[in-house]
Structure formats: C-alpha cells, structure tokens
Length: 183
Image (cartoon, rainbow, N blue to C red; front, side, top):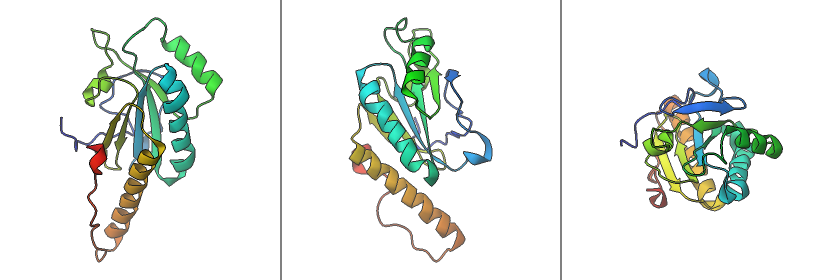
C-alpha cells in the first residue's frame, strides 16, 4: 500500500463504515486540511481503560488546533457481544464527544478498513496529515508522550507549510517529516 496515498478524511473516503453511532465527522470545508487521528478499537479492556480516554484527551486538547479524531469500532471476535447496541450503550454512559463509526466486516467477518490500512488487531492508531497522507501508524497501545510528540510535530509542520505558502523565503525544516519510531 502506498503510505502517501491521500485519504480525504473529511468525507472518510476509503473507510468502510457500516454506520455511525452518534454524529459522523464534520464534512466539507470545516474538516478540509485537518490532521486526523483514527483509532480502531473494540469494547475490550484496552479500549475502555486506555485508548478511548486517550482519544478523548487528544480531542479535548487539539480540537481547536486543526486536529480531528475519529474512532472506528473494529470487531474481529465475539461479534454477538460487541454489536452496535452494546457500543451505543457504552458510548452513552461514557459520554465521548468524538465521532464513532462501525467498521464494515468482510465475508470472513474481519474489519475492512482496519485491513485496508495495514493493521490486523485492535487497538490500532493511524495519523493522517492535512493532505490526507498516512504519517504514523501504531499497533497496540501508544504512550501519551510518543503520540503527543507525533502530533506536535505534525501541527508544527502544518503551521510551517502554511506560513511557507505565504512567504517563500521561509527555509525548509531540517528534521525528517516521519519519526523513526513510527515507521
């Protein structure tokens, strides 16, 4: 898969969403050019205790800085226990404020979007830059420190590129755009 292939997340193109639980992500001009953090999770201990609260913290901290978050419920086992009704009940109790979709399953009952992005288990976290390119991909739980560094770098890079677009005299950054730990 071409890691730099654009994925316009404003419309979630390329994702196979069965349905949205609550409101879908904002589309149109408001979401164009935003960094996007996409979390694949299912209702298990890691998601409930770690991944979803982390995504809520990201949403609370970075929503006003041009960053969007989306969670996809990607069930690959115990389908009957983790269906849409269970997810709806959990989300209603937890009060998360970001969009949550349900990843469509293939005929073998595997999450399609998760596989399309080269992941095979949850939790998994993917970060797209403002041009829709996959910039970071993490399997398993991600430390807050690593994720904050990734996001801060991409936000700074985005601000730099916007400034550079207005003033061509600004020099290019010397640090590579992708951190070694995220390859």
